[in-house]
Image (tube, rainbow, N blue to C red):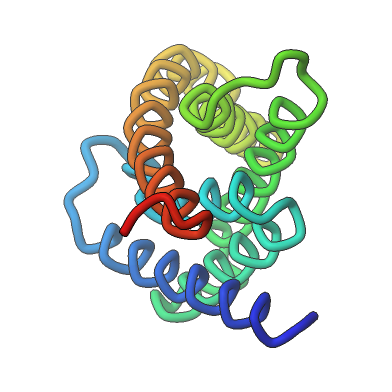
Length: 171
């Protein structure tokens, strides 16, 4: 990995970890319900520079964020890693395999929904509380769409500015 690429990944990962820790300080309306501010950096990485960078930013965000919060290797870490990895894979598929590809906002919505569904399924498999958790799945899907829309919109605006500056159209 060249120095410029490594620096970019480190900068985006640092932003993602900072957003992840900041978000943990905010009150959660529901258990496991996060706004997903740190996902903005993963979406920017995926759409701006590709899957490898997004994978590294996502992995650094989950590992470093959970380490700083003191929950590394806990169930929260496992759920976070599984959900975010599933979301990244889903966003990559709709980005490069869907014709025509979805927008940044559309892919972010899909990623947020997949993140929530993977976490609910994992919770159900590991703890066998299918009745309680399954009844919440619809709410988590709706929450995923709303959160994915907001994070996708923010990522899209940032990407437009970065691309414009990189190509020299903004002075």
